[in-house]
Image (cartoon, rainbow, N blue to C red; front, side, top):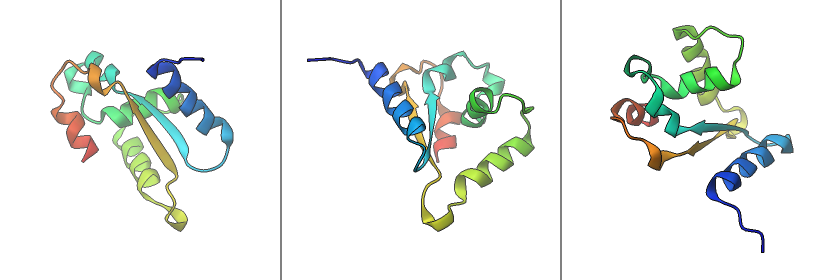
Length: 104
C-alpha cells in the first residue's frame, strides 16, 4: 500500500486539478508563508501570494488587488472560476488578524 503524506497528497490534488484543464482553476496558497511576511506586507497576503506565485511580471498595486477581486467574485453561469487550496493553516506562528479579515 502506497502511503503519502499530507503535503504530497495536497500538491497532487492541486496538480490534478491544474492538469485536468476543465473546471475551476486551482490556486494553491501556502498559509505557513504568512509567518515570514513583514508585518507591513501581511495586509492582502492572499493577493500578494497570488501576485508573487502566479503573476510573475506584474507590479503589485491597488489596481492588481481590484482586478484580482473582480476576477475572483465574478462567476459566469454561477460556476466558480477558481478553487482555493489553503495549506499549512496549523503552521502559523504570528498574529493572524489581517489574514482572518481577508477570509471574511
